[in-house]
Length: 301
Figure 1 (spheres, helix red, strand yellow):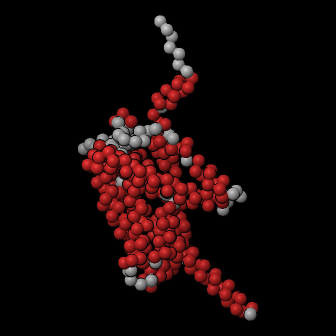
Figure 2 (cartoon, helix red, strand yellow):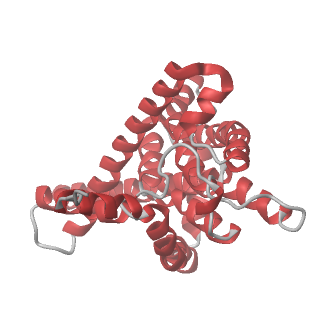
Figure 3 (cartoon, one colour):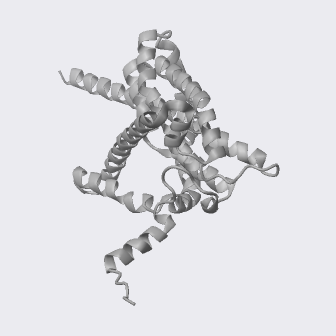
């Protein structure tokens, strides 16, 4: 009987395929055998999807371009639409353990519809991945004397070994970094409320002073913010791993579906509003600095 020869490359490939944590069923259906995490663990992991810094950047950008009143109205409108549209998607993904591709196909859009959905979701992911890389690299350049292009490369490649391990590693990472993230998120606004509480009243006065709602500017702001609708695809990727709903866990199951599904837009909207506030603060500081420089030049003349 001939002895089967297995090459080293084939052996390494078989070991890689056997290691489920290398993929974590990144696409399609999440089987029961792999749904090993608790409802709380999956919910925390999915809730971490709202941590991306582009939210503050989007809020600041639309506030400066379209006005603070129009920006805040657009954020509230988009938040409502995202929550209403994301709730049924999250429910069916958590109930049937399907990703956006299969949900689209099952909703009657067919193979072509699911392909286009995957294309849109992939484009959204790459765009926001690039934005997050740019934001993180710019922040690191403030403390590291390295060229910005090099920091772009480092920040882009650092995520690869993390996502290669799928939900297994991401859930562990979220478990111990999420409390730190929440503290760092709230700390700047709490510090301003403690030391300069009048800033929030001044911001509210600026919103009122900016005039009523301009429908053209409001539409422009909502157009930018509506790009966040696609974020539900990432939330669905996590919710697929929820355990089965039972009579014993139905309340916690529903809480995870709502809060970690469409509920991501609640902290997301607050972060966009926070970005608008920070943009107003920097805008005011720039105006004061410019006015002070002008007064100084005038005095010298």
